[in-house]
Every structure is written in structure tokens, then in C-alpha cells.
Figure (cartoon, rainbow, N blue to C red):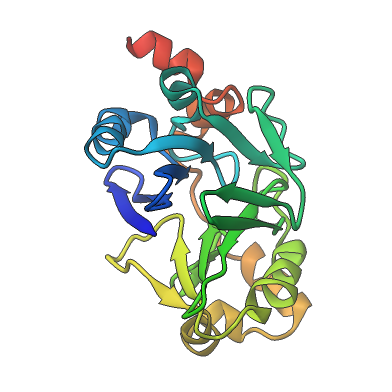
Length: 237
């Protein structure tokens, strides 16, 4: 399998490219509008056909590239069920699979950071890969104080679904602000301070006391991303 982890510096966002080596069918996870030239260059250099571009949730800190990628590559754009984005081609349900070549991404509904948050799991013989969006970050978890966020739901999503994956599973988050690129389920169980809170009510209290400032781009990014970033892309052109 072809795998690339790309980084957008302004919002500290990771974008992931997965592709089948034989069929050259590819999937993008959480692409950022400003990086479109880089994405198209990589697709060309690696001789890949983009089949799917998906967001793990409606982002508040950057503008998605989903709409522009669909216009330029005819890929299928994907959100999880419950998303209010009217522009996507396909809404996946919990447990649904996204197929590319001989590989499959399993959709996992993980509400909490936002109401429509999904994670995606790629099972592999040696060890699986979890693309955790903003649900589990490396040594942290995504905030739950806007966009339908719910700390109790996030606690359930993490403890009932994600932490039940094999301990060796690689965890690839949607963001990192300290230079970390990858973790594992076992590492996060052991070292993530928010996952040491084993009581649901204590977790809710912890998250309610974070008092974080709103993302700088929130007022622009959320409405733009509900439209897959298409209007913003047209303005930029």
C-alpha cells in the first residue's frame, strides 16, 4: 500500500493519502484547500487515481479541499452520517466500508468532538491504522464545546469503540501541535492524560473546564466547509 502523511502548517492539520499499489486507486483523508497544488502534483507523480476524498468532520480551523478535488478529479466526496454538509457525494454509516483496490477503510461513528465526527480504520495483517480525526489526538482529545460537541458522547466513542481496537494499532490524528506524527492505541491508553479519566462524569467535568478560545478561522471555515469549500475556491481562482 502507498501511504503519505502531509502537514499543513497554519492549522497544524495532517492529510493522509492511501492508495493501492496495483490499481493505483487512492483515498484522501482531511485534505486542506491551500494544499491543492501539492495534492495534484503527487497524484500525477505517483500515477494515482483519486477515488475518494473524505473529511473526518466539519472542520473549524481550516477550509476543506473536498469540493475542489471533486471538480478536478471527479472523486467521490465523503462525510459521516449526521453531517449537515449538503455538498458531499456520499454519507457513510457506522461500520460501512470504503473500498479502494484490495483495501478497505471501515467507518466508525465517533460523535463528541462534533456531532458528525467519524474515524476510519484500515485493518492490516501486521497492525491496523486508525485515522482518528480530532477524537483522539496524541496525548489529548478534541475539544467538545461547539458544533454539537458532547464530552459524554466523546468519552463513549473513545472507550467503547476506539480503545477496543488492537493495542498495536497505529493512531494517526487529524492534528498535532507538538511535532508528534503517530502513536498507538496502547501508548494512548497508557500515556494520554485524558484517557486516564475512567469516570464519564469526571471526563465531562474536565472537558467543560478547558476554557479554550475559538479557532481563529471558525466563523469562515465552518460555513465554507458545509459547502465543501467550493465557494471559497472559486473566489481564490
